[in-house]
Image (cartoon, rainbow, N blue to C red):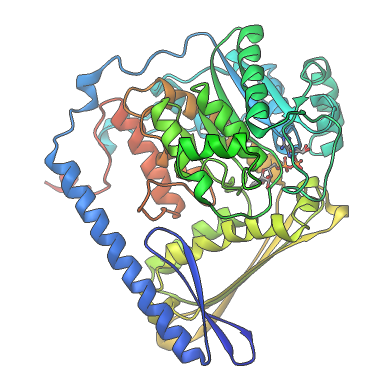
Length: 505
Ligand SMILES: NC(=O)c1ccc[n+]([C@@H]2O[C@H](COP(=O)([O-])OP(=O)(O)OC[C@H]3O[C@@H](n4cnc5c(N)ncnc54)[C@H](O)[C@@H]3O)[C@@H](O)[C@H]2O)c1
């Protein structure tokens, strides 16, 4: 609930399908009551859907993955990574992979490269590396291409982004200079703060999609890749809501032919990739693949999808602290988050349309983690605000402040202040690496490739996509358990519940 202006109080809640609603009331009490009632109803509805889903899945005995041995195809040959948006995140990722391949640096922050996975009981001492447990593409097998509205090659773009030290970039120069951007599908109405010359021309959006499909086929042929993955690292597009055009393949294709303005450029890349059977991950908060048409295409063409919006700095910390408050039943009266950043992403987010897309993505998390409908005395009244301020001197080195007002036993108030001096793209690059390797694994897995949304990759996102009707899981540690249990399941290992009674028999 929040006050819009004197005498106008807004009830603000999420329904069972994850849609946000607001309704105006004359008094705060009426708004609060309405919000609590609607939130409780949404929770009840979701709980009942989950129980039905659980009943359905438990009555159909799923064969253990072990019985399906051999259903993860080996990671043979090269994996081609295609990146719409060759800016700070993309160049930090590609330069990082090359630096690691040359032995110049370590893949810090990457679960696929440095993480381990415990198997069996705590007493068994089995904890292989993730990359040895499941068959992932090796870093030496990765090849890259991308699209951007600017003509800079990856060396120039990385230099402009100013994330990596020039001494490191000089050592990678021949490799990075060899990756030049393909012409982009771009619409200034969706990203107001930038414009560039390297843009495709076409009579209709369908013609543009065909050109992206040609690019994909061309890259596959010229790079010799056996498999491909597309990873959106482009700017945040203006906020839009799904319309009739996004509801099915048929309506979407009609809209492409008719140049429907509700089709954003990122959707054109997604459509082209999924039509080519290529998995697609969305690192920005735009809708892109979070649409019925993309789910339908993904399942039909067995091209896994996931998104949206990398969980890197402030939201990562939020998804760690908020579950701690809830686990200990500590109340929350307010959470004020503000950021300063000066990179191109910050400049794009200075536009109200792009900021709204980001704001929606950042705001949803607390309500989902804290469940005010279930705990009205603790979280029914919380005030949550997120601000992003473009401040050029900082470049990519963002500073995120959080002021958190909590309350404990007998309602006594306390405060927590977080000041995170982070590096946006340094936090995002290992996420990109893990996502492309895991999406490629999903594509090679007979169990995962036809599912559409890969919810087990929620771990990496601010606004995790889920199957229709399911609320997203935001708690980082539940997400981590979900990811690792998915890997154990794929390999026919026992899932780990952390019950642990067997140690005391
Ligand atoms: N770095 C982080 O921590 C982080 C976290 C979450 C989400 N993100 C998102 O990741 C995306 C990339 O971030 P960044 O810091 O690299 O931004 P950036 O501005 O440095 O790079 C984005 C690039 O996309 C290009 N672009 C825009 N529209 C395009 C289009 N239609 N086709 C092809 N290229 C296009 C721009 O020219 C630019 O080079 C942003 O949407 C950002 O919000 C970043």
